[in-house]
Length: 608
Image (cartoon, rainbow, N blue to C red; front, side):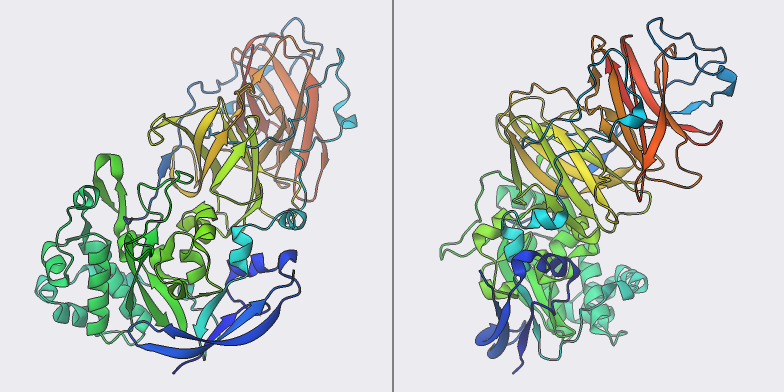
């Protein structure tokens, strides 16, 4: 017999849920002790003790979309050696001689995207004939932003209800298993160089993979790594529903399987190595699924969730999950192709993270107390493994959902990315669904992702989306580490726009060495007929990398405007200016560091 305890209020160890548990919604909890029956992997059901809280008041490899940053079609040009001719209607001083002007460095633009839910319009461009002094104008709000704490009190959603579920553990549990402290390089290499003779049977294979290790974590890892490297997903069998035998001996011989075969082999190897494990069956948000596609949880004849299989184990008195299928790679449904991609996110995954994508047939196999309802499972945001790795928290809009509705083309999303990769930039990929609800077409000029200066001491990003027409869209948020660098989506959202697409596209922003936020103008299309245009910018740097000023130039460099520093916050510098832009054509916004320093491109605009 063993005792199960729920690490709930005041003691829940997982960082993600711990953060959410601090919401004002979770105040005033008390704990009670109840007795229940639960099954430890590989053993018979036993009676256990669980501490719970009373509160006041189809399967396939993991869906991973790889995104390639696209190159801007019109690169910023270098400045000529002669002094540029100023447009005759510009009421400003002549620019400095070109010899003193540094050459702009061409930057690649971020791919654009779109989304929904009506938000206040961006700061209006001034209507006066003569521009006001920039220093007198206050910085416009990016949107109607509350603090994160205020937002969390707005409405209870599935994420809040998940935050009230504790992870079940055995008696003797002290703290979460720290996988980050493990180096699996040698273990993975050992598994991948298994001799052919040792792969002839489960007995010889299990012995080779595990006999040299005393720590069960390394034993599990060797088994997981071998399966991911040697078993190929049966894409044709999955799509046509005519897969080959999933018996262990047959999978070991053919090296082809769907999820049941992967789980069977993992289970057999664990049993042979005297490691605890059990097969969990249920439903998963796998390849072919889309957020908000209307597909409910698939059920078997007994009404239980079905379509996928994975494994549960106990290590360090913790219930953890292993999905060898999703750990092996991904499939592209339209091409009927499998791509091998080792994903150890699905190795020893905690229950409160796997529940975003996997829903067991038996509620007790969630190892959450209380278990999450099927309705809430479908209502959770459509997150990918990197969501947990980056420790992302969705601040708004509420409810946090896989589907967001825009009433008038525009939506603003705020994300706290606590562990943003060094040198990473957030971009949005935006596609429009076809009439069949499956095919997609890329949409450009719809998304701009920037840091939100309003959130001090937090790494909060503001994603501004403008839908070009009525219809359904998909927004994938991706972190890339430079121009033309690929990245994997960490959050996917369906955007349902009820507006008519009357708002202009956003500026075409570039990847920059430091974070730059464009508060105004938030439109990439400017009108020459308007008297003045107001530029308000924030730069997140205060050392020698900080901008000395911003400069906007037209394509033939006959028009130049400088945007000077007007103030600062705790973590950023503020730049503002207002001037007419009466000459039509393409313009590029740069920033300059120091006197005669480099000039990275920030964004491009078009005056019509």
